[in-house]
Length: 217
Ligand code: MN
Image (cartoon, rainbow, N blue to C red; front, side):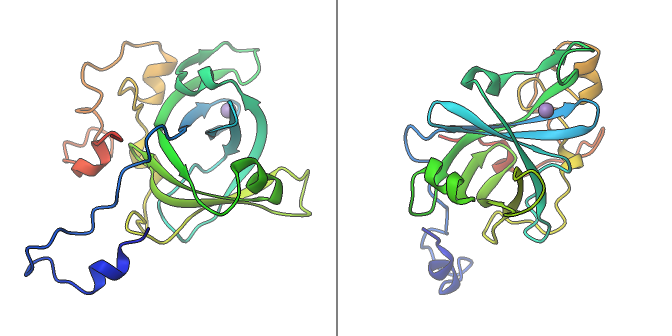
């Protein structure tokens, strides 16, 4: 439920009432994963746990918290659940050869009025993400009658987590090991503290908001 109306009526600088903190994910919520994959072309692989498998889309420009752009997402084959946490190198010459970074992970809550597979069948799937980097409401919508029929658009809904101008490349580090893409490609060890290394921007010491770091309960 959106708390926008509750928040609109109150000035939390003046009232001791609690602010509009959105609830966490429902218990036992399914997982989602995003991998940054430096293959023939750099892209992001978005995976949602649905019906015992990972429904998967390849997103050339990556996801965004900016509600303005629509990001092309090509539906690809289902992946096994175990693939979600994968980070490492696919050997050259193998399918998808290149380095794979676990860019984000968390759980999601299905929105909309039908089961997930039904929504996919209809070409309009709505969900709320509880990731380390991606949060809030999204939709992924099939572009009907286009291309091979596997072209979807990923959209960020306008909510409290929407951030105009948000740039995915400022967050190019692993949530699993804190490594940059080149460090994964060179098989360098995990950073001691992935969270400490998890500041946006290369070499930036800037503090990131606590919400970016919080794991779903
Ligand atoms: Mn890929």
